Amino acid sequence: MITRILLMLALGSVVQDGPKKLPLPGYISPQLRKVLDKRMEHHGRGAIGLSIAVVLLAHDDVAELALGLAEQPGLARPRLGEEGTLNATLPAQFFSFQDQLRERAKELAAAAKQKNNAKMHAALGRVTETCMTCHAVYLNGPGSEEKWWPRDE
Image (tube, helix red, strand yellow):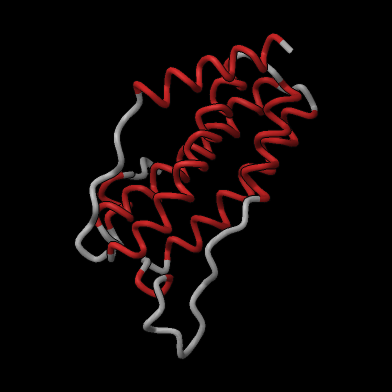
């Protein structure tokens, strides 16, 4: 219960003091921006709450929040003949990142259910990597993730 109270307090201050909206890339229409704004606001609050729950080692909350993130309805991939739809204006990688986020959030939930702090920490890092890479592509267009997120491999 105390964890829930701390999460609510932290989320309230983060939402008020947090960053403003991401800039609007030139390829995103105002109509699509409205759709994304609504989704990302809810999605962002959940991600912040998830981070706080991991730091507090609130395993049950982490599992619940991570599964909630994994089960959020996604944007549908455009099909052939749907070139004029709002979703078709998003970079194709967006939909791959959406799938990757679901899988990584499930991994985080599993680590939390096992109460394995090391796995939970690593899984949160992978979730965050997916978010940051998706944001890089959103802001700078396809191909920017390689420049923004260089691999040391």
